[in-house]
Amino acid sequence: MSRTTDACTDDARTTDARQSATRRQILARTGALGVGIAFAGELSELFAGSAAAQGRAGYGPLVEDPAGLLDLPRGFRYRVLSREGDALRSGEGRVPSNHDGMAAFAGRRGRDRVVRLVRNHENRVTAAVPVPVVEGLTYDPAAKGGCTVLTLGRDHDVLDERVGIAGTATNCAGGRTPWGTWLTCEETEDRAGTNGYTKDHGFIFEVDPADPRRSGAVPLTAMGRFQHEAVAVDPGRGVVYETEDAFDRPFGLFYRFLPRRPEGGLGSLRAGGRLQAMRVPGVPDLSAVQETGASFAGVEWVDVPDPLATTTPIRNQDFGPKGITHGQKLEGCYWGGSCVYFVSSYARSREGSAADHFGQIWRYDPSARRLTLVVVFGPDTDVQLPGEEPDNICLAPGGGLMVCEDGEGAQHVFGVTRKGAVYPMARGRQNIGTAAEPAWGEFAGVTFSPAGDTMYVNVYTPGTTFAVTGPWHE
Image (tube, rainbow, N blue to C red; front, top):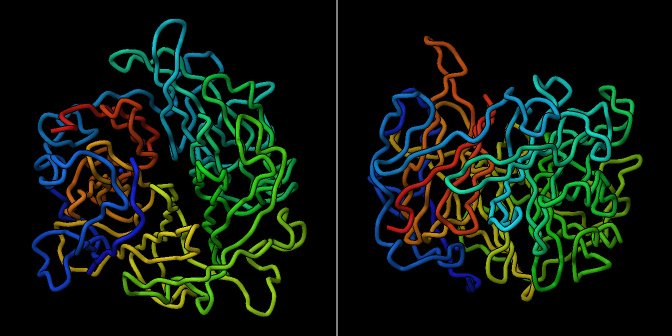
């Protein structure tokens, strides 16, 4: 079941029968019988939007797409903006593989207003289509990952598509800054000499969507070298929160970076600062906490001994006799109101976690130094409902949350209303398996246009970027 608690005030936020058993997780009211998905209590802490959007549970059933790409509710339509392997409009090469994290920024092109999409490519050395090497934008020519930037005009016409950064590795998620740049994160700890790399990897890089050459390809080394996933910036204090999606034990940590120049601005994070890891007294493993509403005061932040992990990965380093707090699959991260929220996509005891869960959302209140478990996903109850392994998440302008699942079987984007009802928003139809054993690429990078009238989302494989329009505010 899933329950929620009250929290910080926010100032501003037909399923395939072949789904695997583990995908039959739902968010249900305490004591509910699996007839719907809801949270016990309001989720106003997570969402911004109009009250009118709170009363309806979605936009109706999904309509099968005759083109076999993307199922949406009636009244919605999509446009394919970009596909893996197509030519980049800049002439720099082909659209890279493995579309992942993404954000949309308002901009101008001459006198015209445009939207710029910065898109990660989670490419490893085996990637089918690498990010093209571009002089002045490449960190390590041996690495295949990076970002591309799409410039969109009216009606979502693609005016330009070019490399934003190249020569990075396994660019998974990241986060936007208050000054309008994108922080792209390497989800790897590979050193120079590994997989043919010529430089160490595991860093965060800043990308300027308006002019990538202004940001270049400079690793923000003070922010740590580890298996980065996502970041969120406290706009008032300038503190940057970071999640670590470590693949093995000990699992990842939740970090904060105290920049030397907290006022921000392009390039400010290069000035350095202090990297710290979260210690929750009495909680060495977040998965051990199972009850929503569980709250822990007196959260401590401990300086990381060696942020560059020159000999030992950070999560293995000595944090003193009290140790440090770990969590499996720490992924999505975002700022809402006066708190930071982060996702643990799942925990499995057979893999080394203290307990099992199908997804959690945690809230940290910096002013109170308090950590609270606000959402728990599960248990397994209804084949027609979502949703294991929440991954990418974003706030929707109409008063809810959009969640990309990252599991087996059919792949969806799910919406969550402020009242807690969960509904299918999109389903991928591109079969990357066989007719006998179909499979679908996960969704990633869900984000909304600055005007709130378009949802942009990626399919990871085959790399495809969609713009989805329709009656969002109804």
